[in-house]
Image (cartoon, rainbow, N blue to C red; front, side, top):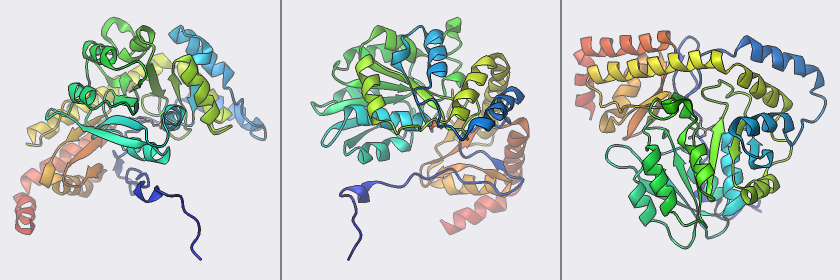
Length: 368
Ligand SMILES: *Cc1c(COP(=O)(O)O)cnc(C)c1O
């Protein structure tokens, strides 16, 4: 007798984690921070270890209060989750079910299509432009009476491209108000076109203030270096936030994650220095790849996308042989996370070694 399975689950691919790196190699496959946790964050977590026999504060009141103050919104509009992946799932479950459509650009964050299918909804993937940017006109044209939610990943993973605040404003204004637009700003801290212009936050929070059908998604995993603790948050319209709380897994966010997030907000000046360094290495990575003849795309995230097409495996292999683990999408391209200066030194050495060794490309051509 076969065990029960849920109908439709065959269509859901399991999430693939970025390759792990052998000891000593540079792990540039998951867009993590290359910096170890701040001592003040470690201390805060350490101080809390004595109470892990207790359940966490499910409402994350202290952290949500701080975020509400920072963005000048009511605390009831701030929701937390075990990473912003969980928040993305909450938002989908809050607005979409069987037969509803959830739209996103493609390629974009790999979790979107599976999260949509798991909710029983239908994913609608709209191709990026030839410049690897969200095609907002095509997305508008793809809206149907069944559309419930549209993700805009800005900057986009894996391409690092952004859509500007004005374009985004026009888009949001054109989307019917019974469709929720979710601006996923996982990489906003690395965006030098928006985040630092005028010294404000990313475009998402501004759009949230001006339109009734916008939610913003932020995470502590990337710029703040807490990927291992799993914590992210959304700022969403009241009715949406209320329904998110209904679909959230109870106690999904630990006290350790909450306290680490608060400690990180206390250390933003220190974190800004680290973020600047990641941005410097990202731009250096772009320059090195371009100089070596690879079609790297200008990035505003902590990663560089190389749409290498049929040379994807060649690039992934030559970097791996140089001790650099990346994320390759077969036949499409390679995503390389920005790392420490030493990590990018390795990329430089690997590119130089392959240039000095024409055998490698000749060998490749022979096997194609
Ligand atoms: C990494 C990432 C996230 C967040 O991941 P969490 O660790 O779950 O917070 C969200 N959106 C995008 C586009 C990402 O790349």
